Length: 470
Image 1 (cartoon, rainbow, N blue to C red):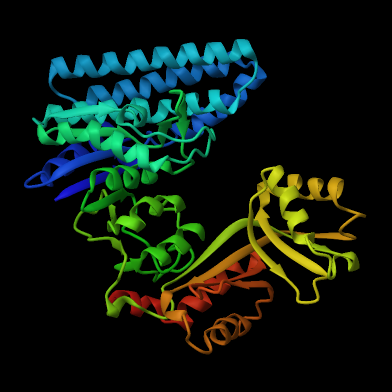
Image 2: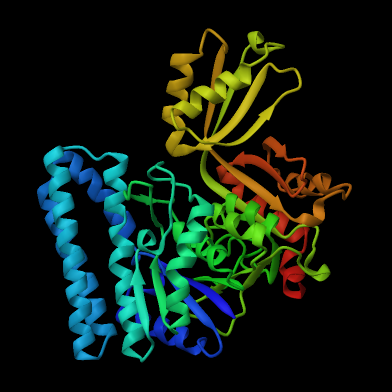
């Protein structure tokens, strides 16, 4: 089989774990060709983001401390993970070279006194660029031929939308295949940085938070892999958040459509766009736990087996959200009102997660992330209040609850069952939205009612028992 294995940041944040990853890859080598995709060491991406703020403030002390800390962390992991003296020296030399480049980049940005999206992408790439060679050398240390490459070197070509770049798949497929095929033929394991690509001018781009999953599926589609394995620190996709529901279960099998809904609705184990490259090629994705390799995890596939097609598969919640309600008589029957509202918010980079409009057309309700709330209300007030809309009401402490399952399609009474279950516990539903696909039913409640509502629905659809069977 040809496999692409992605390892998350928690799998490479200590020497023991890096050795464990190398052994894990070795154990699956027999008869298989493997490409590895590596995330930044846990905490590194957040550290780089916060250092970007220090740059804006010209805080040189924080910057120096961060560089020193990053050098220590990665040198310690490299020295502990690799036993061969020559390889250890090579790895540490590579780490030091990248750290020295990081220092130069930070110094240059400090002189400019601003962080542009382009320079931020360059800065953000260092997390993966530091962790990837360490894993490659750790494989060589246990006798496996390996090469390390950045996403740019592997051939991932993107547009120039820094921070959320999209791969140009036709060219990327040709380039990645041309670059990696010879390595695989020579029995080498290419180890590629997650998260990173390059635009047509060779500038480093990043493909969004959690982008290592995306890199893995882009590579899989490019080299015609049989499966993608996303190794993380969870056993798989779950029927609910185990922090909320004690008897939440791992789902054995879900469809691409269901996984897409789950990823969008807060299943943190996957980048929502990661499914795009493999949906057309129908390459299955497995989500597995690096530290619990006996568990088979969740498989995401085009056509799940009949047994796994439950009415409802999972109940998820998105916290830290806010509800904005805009209303006014002038909105009724006026074509383009919604377009003006959404366009105004889009221009200010506010992402709307959920929308509901009353048939009277006199109000539109929108859910946004709490971090976008100030920007959203200010934008609406400055641009549209008193013109298109008369009033803006805000509820800044709500949660979105989504009930997901392909078995809901065409089944009568699912909504009644959902709302009946939460009503039993006196939970007030503020807003409802369901797409015509009927794959998910989402509704908004006050954040204080969130846990209760999730537990009620998990019990109502008997997910603790149902998941165990499917």
